Amino acid sequence: MNTIGLEFTTSLSCVDAAQERIAPMIDSLLASLPDPDQLTDHERRGIIARYTAVLEGNFIYWMTATYLSVQSPEAHAIIKENLQTEVRDNHPGMLRRFAVATRATSTDLDRRTVDRDLQQVRGFVARMAALDIVLMMAFFEGFIARFMPYLAGLATRLGSSELEYTDVHGVVDVSHTEELYRAFASELAITPDAPPLEKLLGGVALLRTLIATILHPK
Ligand SMILES: [Fe+2]
Image (cartoon, rainbow, N blue to C red):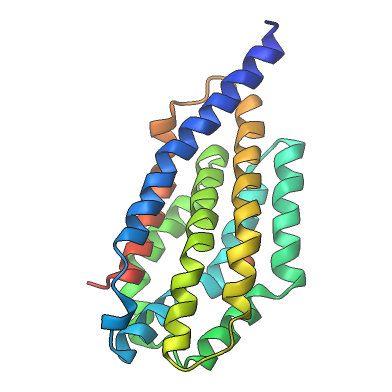
């Protein structure tokens, strides 16, 4: 096998390894979700409000940081397409409408509840470490896609039928996740002496902690 072929194979197996490492983290977050029928309306609104406090103002900024961090043309193209969808279809506005319709817009307390973990993720994002941040966003998109039915279930239990946000993200984020793993492979292929996978999961761990706080406030 020539060098290029070897690099390509190595990148692909590393992507498989990353997916195998990240998928169980998403599984365990979903398994930890409280039974929506057992929650009070106040608790249902709390999950929506903390989710909105994190996503509404940070998602596009973190994806933009990902765009600025990567170097390969393929990763740039993938992330640009993701950002164009976010901006053109006004996903922050969509999320805002979802939260308003459930009367679950975030309060100062909601923001303070997530603040410490949120600032940790921001500090990580500021390092602009391409491989690490692409994995963090792949984890994020993968979680969001699978979380949407639960989030929609909270909204309908609160009497809302404004489900455009959850309908759209349950679909587009599945392909966005796959594309981000492709971007990871492209970045790996141009990174000589990339660190082992375990050293690239710092952002994933911080974001997992933040999501756990959204779901289970301390
Ligand atoms: Fe979005």
